[in-house]
Image 1: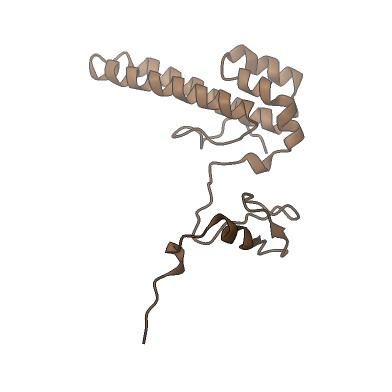
Image 2: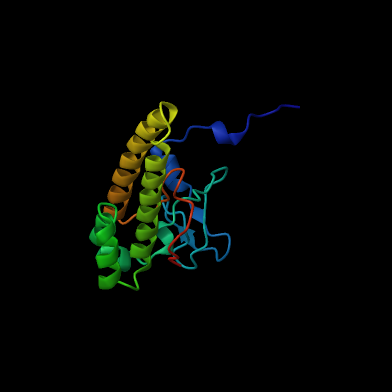
Length: 165
């Protein structure tokens, strides 16, 4: 009896990959290669052995809403006062509320860093590392908001302060 290696390790050419198509397990609609959600019913569709990215919530939001509020969403990471202005200008935007939540998490993270800085030596070191992380999180948030993406920030992004759904 001959044993064959698993097919997951086979390298396909670009032309061979075009032949392979994905279909929605719920409604059977053909799904474009790079899409992770069915265009008909919205069901998550993933290639075999792939793990869905739980932190990517972009498909939850209306693309028109995201396109209309992406700049406001990006500005929310820069200043706490922009959050208030953004809420006054677009109170019903789910995409904006998502990024307001993320920016508030970065602000709370910054406050915690300030409290940790009170502790001599170890606290100072931790606060420097935390401050660098806060800057990185802020830049990530601004870039993702501007690109109309809704991906949770690392470490802190999974928490919810402002409900957006």
